[in-house]
Length: 330
Image 1 (tube, rainbow, N blue to C red):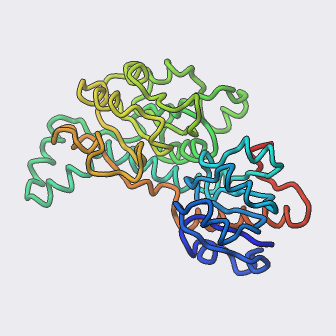
Image 2 (image 1 turned 90 degrees about the vertical axis):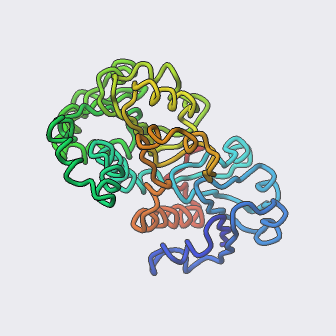
């Protein structure tokens, strides 16, 4: 069996266990961004494509690979893969659902704590010799909050949000709200320590709102003016999902108006982010109320090891004539 990998060269070898199915396949490594013709010249006879979570796998590439049986995302996202084309051609599409849940949950809570403790401004204050003045200011105002003081709303409740809820409970958070189209059973809610709320009520009752949704036609741009207007005055906003979920202009307006106290963002629309991005062009005061991280929530070494364990399990299933476990285009 031959596998075409579209992504960071060396990932398959770097993150696969020695005993994995990798040792039983022929591989071809290719960077993202090559033409269809270049991919076909390299591995047009491949039976499997393993693609970076944001890589494009169009119908034209599938048409040039008559032996293709499986396209597997290297991560959780798969919106760059033409699902309809794959379905029409009888090609399985799989992802690594849950592989990065723990890692992204950690990044989510990191951003929450970073905003509550204003880490970037406080780091700068110490470096500039203003440690005591800043410390005394907090003591006089009494406005440093613990995470356990906050009500947290999770929009979407898949594996990442569930892991986030577990970490929040470990930090003593007792008011954890969630929204999803199909609420959990009362027994599941009690077990997970969460409470379902309709979207608008969740936004109005949460001190911190965190997005945990995939990108699709229903969710693109969902964090818009109406979304932020429904949030509690002075709340914090976190996005560790995808930048396409957020209307940047609406987010900037919400920060300018004071509706939002801070935003913690691991991902932005239009990645790779350039210096002319709207969220990097705001005033100095506003810039101090945005905490960025470079979309690293799900790329821990452990996440990639878990992902490749899933990938090789699904590849082996296809090689042996079985249905893979993680099909997203049934």
